[in-house]
Image 1 (cartoon, rainbow, N blue to C red):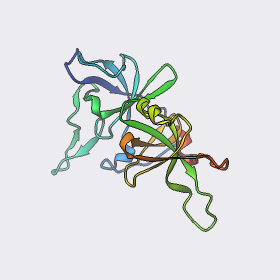
Image 2 (cartoon, helix red, strand yellow):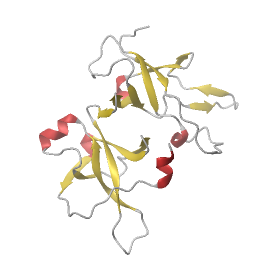
Image 3 (cartoon, rainbow, N blue to C red):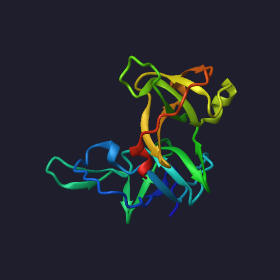
Image 4 (cartoon, helix red, strand yellow):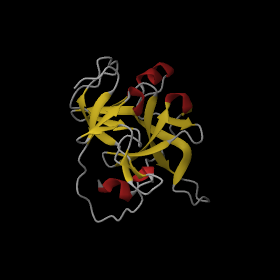
Length: 193
């Protein structure tokens, strides 16, 4: 089935992990956000192809309870584990073994906090670009650049065992020069997948 504007995506099967008790349907952190493209729309300007893995918005595969407590699927649900996904709900895609960020989005690795007087484990509003919006290269920002971003613009994802922040391109405010002591911060719980 081909649509005019929406991708048809199914959730990627998750590997069985150690026993985790999750009783929260409502929390977006516990929803699957990786899918596989089953078909592409007629109007496709993204480079995404059938079979690619995609990182999607947390509401796409979400299950929730309505006001009466009845479990429901998201409004993206079509049938048989297939979902309609609009282009603006996809942030990156993976073909073979390489992830590519879509225009308007970047994925940033948080860095360890080196301030010995702080209890925070990671440096706020600062990170290393892992997957980049190609338009940022015009601004002399590349993969592995150290950047700063606006407060509340980052959104957490776990991709291939790495905790990353999705940061819109228009929220990146500065490129820092490396001091040489910056180290990516990836907690052990993120690596369990």
